[in-house]
Amino acid sequence: MGLVRLRIREFAAKRNWTLKEVSNRSGVPYTTVKTYAVSSGMAMADVTAFYKLAKTFDVLIEDLVEIVKE
Image 1 (cartoon, one colour):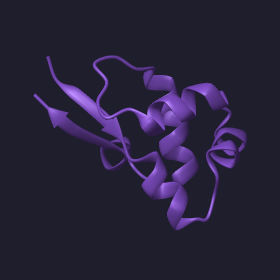
Image 2: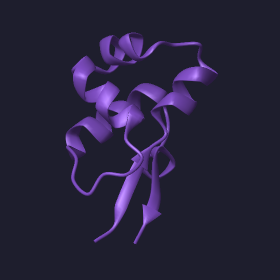
Image 3: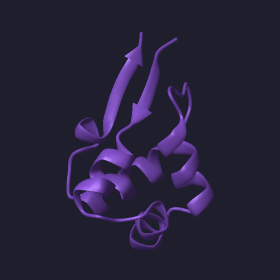
């Protein structure tokens, strides 16, 4: 099973946003944003949250997601 990591910290840092700001701007709960930001690899996640986060950062979902293990 593949694992993915979200590049939330990287995109937030480029904009000087905190994870709380990412949460507020995206509408994704802070606990979810924080969990996704610190996870080194996830097997399952909420695709709707991926969409909202990608839209917030104005990037494609493919740019937000990094495959860490296939």
